[in-house]
Image (cartoon, rainbow, N blue to C red; front, side):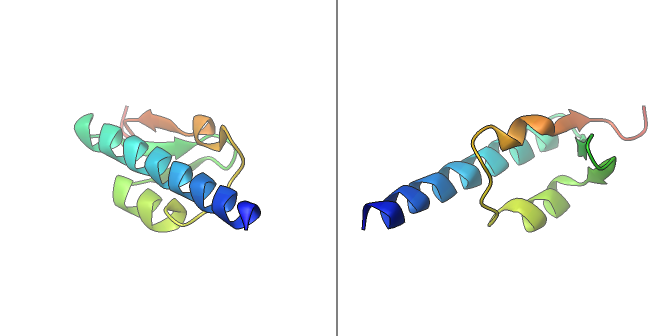
Length: 70
């Protein structure tokens, strides 16, 4: 029972991380860059790909909000 609750809490935390990153990218009129894979995502693409993902703590820090043009 506790494992299920802890997992749900962790997933909610990941969802919040994704939303915060998306909102900041939208505010800056930028995209989200993943250096490990050299992939660019629009905020909408990033949300679609990662909103339901379950990653370890601190996973979101690998992504950078950047302007893909400059």
